[in-house]
Image (tube, rainbow, N blue to C red):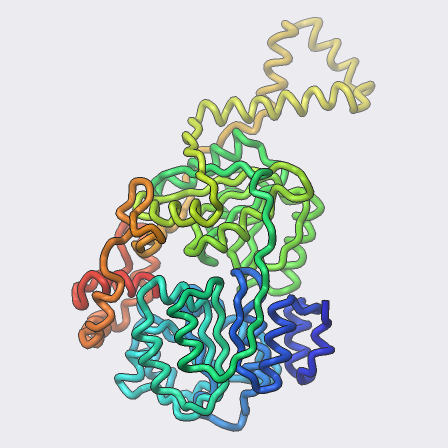
Length: 514
């Protein structure tokens, strides 16, 4: 592998990259950075988790002129979550260069975004619908854009954003550099490349081979509010030596790690808001088996190479199947067996079908264990611990006490008491887990909805042309949009910003995804 110091990047960017803990470039980073630094357009084909953000982020940051207050780079991403993640990583890469950036996406108060745009950001990261909205409002001017990035282009195609992308591309200068990344290259993506890119260099990275035979794959169908108790019982029954739990958001990771700790499990969380020192500390404890459970977002888990993981729990099913493959590949390594359990809400069953088609393997439905079964698991654990002491520990200083107890008590009752004392009985302590809205309904690749879901048979593009009503929706949400998302766990509904009726079914669906 090539060291970042060999890629002809500036000292300020190199400092930022080293601060982020990166030393050697991944294949997609090495290929993209070399061509992009030479001014070439790049067509990158790589799976999620290969380091794409730094691959386009480093040359993008290098090209920014800190003295130019205009928007010089535009990154288009399919979902609000990815837009936020990309902007956070770009902020870290451009920290020493003092680059100003802004993320814009649906579901966030547009008035706040308009005010932030007046602060002259040099990089915009956003979802297609909201970028196009700002273009229409003339609050986003793209005349000085020198670098355009399309991230996860095939996912944007699947979500019905192709018209938005074409419209945005018509509003950026022809004389620019374009970097397009996609896990697959369907005809529509190739057409974009042919139409809007100039003789692009192709950087194609093969997906890591995954020995699926070594990994047992299960799914649990449950509602949001049932998920955590099922997870806690599963851990009690399955007794993982080392487990990774994946959550969709940073808030999710924080709440899960706290709740698991409350229930007596040894758990810590990692996500993008943690300092590098804290992240490394948690990972070191996990590798040394001082922590039994690691809770992580996809972004925080990128690049982790941890042997000995026995179980992976997808507390939230990922939005794309490549992320699923990357997640469960954390277990079943080096010829060892692994186990993966994915939680799916009824409305997300279409995503399960897509994952199964990608992995060419059907997941086995798993019946959630009862509290009684969880107790049996804990009792077995206590019995194993007791037997381990009998065979391995020096008990000489305790034998006199044992003989005294046996002289006055029944032997079976004493052993039962010892087991009860050693059993960490399942805890029913109430925990606070904010309910997340399900992933947007979507068609799967077969056009059907998978098991138990309608797969989102709505026309993806049906709402894309109805953006004229967007302003009214945002005015109604002024000052309240951000709080709405935090209340959803208590109200059981969608965030306030997603309840609009203006724009039709396609509009509602797209806003959830953004």
